[in-house]
Length: 275
Image (cartoon, rainbow, N blue to C red; front, top):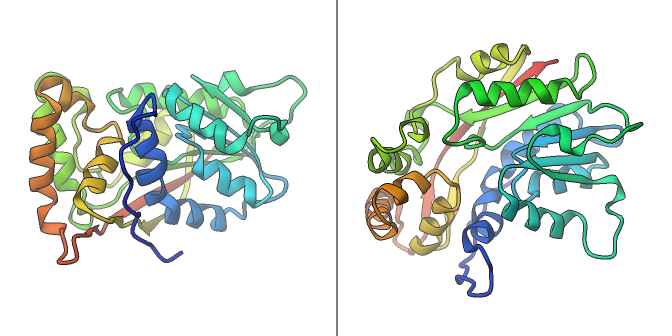
């Protein structure tokens, strides 16, 4: 899929949580190339029973459902889940078996329904502020709901030198320190995903890299999109939104183009592991 700039979005005064809406309308689509690459490689379609950990506002699930998959998703953010329900289970529809839940994988299990045969954890900031142990436990619980040998896809940042967003994320880390050290961003290690998979009792079975540029129509959209990820929440608690925004704009300035758009090349890495 050819990346496109996200069009300008005006802040919504009616949304109960503008950041959740900014995630859905601005930021979530930046990972579309990752979703497409994984779905193509694993031949997602009719017969796929997908469980998404950290499903956000449901774009990846919507794409899988369009391929014919039966989809379920869980997230810790109830506000994003509300938007996912709007997308996947419109009012008056039965949802065609789509299940969404707030919490762990257990909340979308149903008696008599076949086990999942694909699990994804696409959002590299899933469980942001938590620990590798907590993420491994979530993966282990999800694996217990899947068929033996089912693929589990984990995703994370690629090499720091190939991720323009790393400068912005370092701003979040610096401003949050020392208040919330576990939430601080650090460059992804070469074997981080493999180590996480093994800790969860999974067997690594292949990997890949995907270009996922962050493209924004203007600086305002770039700031709103990045703030919606949750990576800057601890920084805003430690300082304030004005300070975070000021330093974020400074970090984004090298990627501001003459036409006012912001373009940040990034590479994401995904790992396929087996239950």
